[in-house]
Amino acid sequence: METTVFNPTQLHLLRMFSYNRDEESLNELKEVLFKYYCRKMDEEGDKWWKENNMTPEKFNEITKDLHFRTPYK
Image (tube, rainbow, N blue to C red; front, side):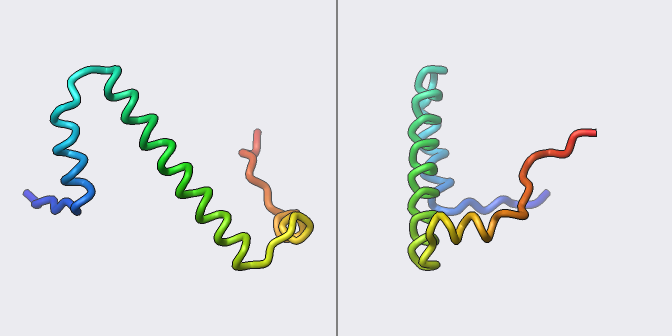
């Protein structure tokens, strides 16, 4: 059996979860984590936008041929 090595963040979260006993607390924690990662993604997007001197026009030109939708058969 392999041993799993947790990083410090994972260990901290596991310790925190040991006190989480009800569904309401779990939902609140999920919301906090969701907002945290949304903010981090926004910050990374803003950083990329600035580093690449992006404008809406430039972005539209770069992404004009990209298709993100799932093709339907």
